[in-house]
Length: 220
Image (cartoon, rainbow, N blue to C red; front, side, top):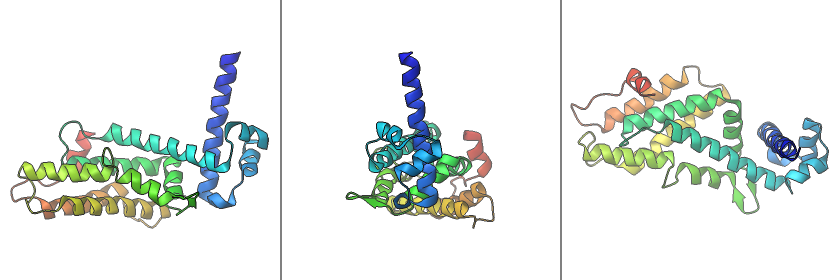
């Protein structure tokens, strides 16, 4: 019985998080109360408070949970072995497509783009902290990959990897936003590939193989 109660409590906690994410993403954090979340799940406000002491605590847990999920996606897609620009570009393309295909991913992207600020923290700082993380962030993956390509003679020695990684992340961010808003009339995967391939053509040395969408697909 105790095990069943623990499992039920864990399930209820997940329902609260998912409901909060949907409401925060659709209505805005400031426009949603714990009562709204409770009513959506047909729970009492006290039941929600039993799991989360405040709306801010719920938001912080929601962000931690969503970021862990995003990191798991990145880890799953991250190329094995030495990073190269084409392999990291392929990984980020698949990450974008996967994010758009998943309701929770779309909602989380909307939430972190909302510009929300609370208690000295901001969604922008959390988002930038993840994307630019020096240990596992996608921006760092691009930068490391380009440096590897330079050492291997695939990329011009004078090419600035840090600037290129910023542009690469801007491509990802901008195209995902366009797709989410319904303003991208063409296929997201192909559009992102052509943007990354154009960057590769600009940085690679003569004789280095061009990026091909079918080759990236084979590596997945």
